[in-house]
Structure formats: C-alpha cells, structure tokens
Amino acid sequence: MSTVLVVEDESAIAELIAINLRHGGYEVRQAANAEQAQAALAGVLPDLVLLDWMLPGESGLQLARRWRADPRTRALPIIMLTARAQEDDKVAGLDVGVDDYLVKPISPRELLARMRAVLRRRAPQALDEVVAVGSLRLDPAAHRVVYEGRHGALALRLGPTEFRLLHFLMANPQRVHTRAQLLDRVWGDHVFIEERTVDVHVKRLREALVPAGCAWRIDTVRGVGYRLLDDADDQSLARL
Ligand code: CA
Image (cartoon, rainbow, N blue to C red; front, side, top):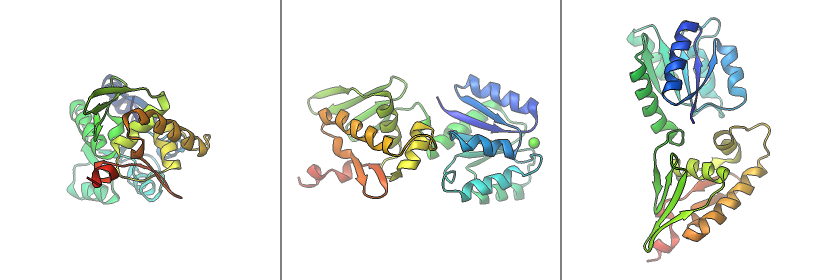
C-alpha cells in the first residue's frame, strides 16, 4: 500500500483529503505545519506528499525547496495544494521542483488521477501495476513473479522482502541505487537497519532468480550500490 503525507493546516480540508485518499487505497499520514511534516519525514519516507502552500510559519514552498536540496528527499514526489490561482505562484512552485500543482477547491477524482500520474513518473513501485523487464513479469497485486521463457512460464518463489526489492528495482531499472536509498524505499527505514541487510537480501534475490537464469540482472556497482540491468546489458544476447 502506498503512503501519502498530507501537509495541511486546515483540519476540515485535511480530513476531506484523507478520507478520499483512504477510499482510494492509500495509507494517509497527516501534518498540520512544516515542523510536523519535517518530523514525519525523519522516519519512513512516504511515497508522495500533498503539500499545502499556505502553512502557519514556514510555507509549503519553503519546505519543498528545503526537501529538494536534501539528497534523501530530492526525488520525493510532491504535489502542491494552494488556494491561489495566479500564474506567477504556479511558476514559483514548479521552479522549486514540485511535480504538480493543484488549485483548491480540489476535486477528489482529479487529485487521485494526478497522484497516479506523478507516481507513475516518479515512483512507479508505489503503484499496483504489473512491471516487466525482459522475460520477467512482476504483478504486485497478485504478489507473483513469473519468468516467461521459451519453454513456458515459470513462477518464481521469493520472500516478501526480496519481492519488494525486485519490484523496486524492476520499476526503476538501469538506475543505480545506494544501500541507503534502498533502505528508504524498500524497507522504509534508513535509520535502524544496517546497510549490510541490503546485501543479504540482494544475495537471496539473486538465488531466487537463478531458476529463471536471470540472476545477472541484479548488478553490483562497486562502492555505490545496486541496479537492475535490462536486455541491452545481456552479455549472452550481445554475443549472438
Ligand atoms: Ca493552509
């Protein structure tokens, strides 16, 4: 389930958004000001933030600027909410690097549609959509990984952590992810889990992929982290 942090000081609006998001299948966390929002990010990162522009104290725009400057939150999907409709404000918001911008009053249907669009672009692993890389197909809803080989389909057996790890890597192929990033995005905890844990689960994931002959897809980038290789990197194909 994807988690959304709603940063909104007007409790009636925050509640209305929260109800609609829960109805849409999201887990909701709430913050009423910048301080609470910052505290909420210190632990587990949400998959997306709905950020009200006008907050008491530090504004949503300042907060977004700060998050974009921090490597840990640089890629955090942010949708800005505001009562202002002026074009200048919109430009200021987009300049800071927020992913989208919605003007109040917000239509719940439009909000959910925009959220899916942002997640598809920025955090596809937060959606329940089937992902495929080469002959590997992962279905998050059915919790199933299938290798579709020349001689038929083979269902692979993965532990829950390996499944989440593979899902994240397949949804974000080719990119190199540091152990800290993987802890944030897959484990949801970069503070209390040791980075070595990542190596243990990567090893298990490779073992689970051996029957499909695609353990090679999980590439170690020395001194940096891991990435999932796509077909262009298949050495056995390249030799043909
Ligand atoms: Ca407000």
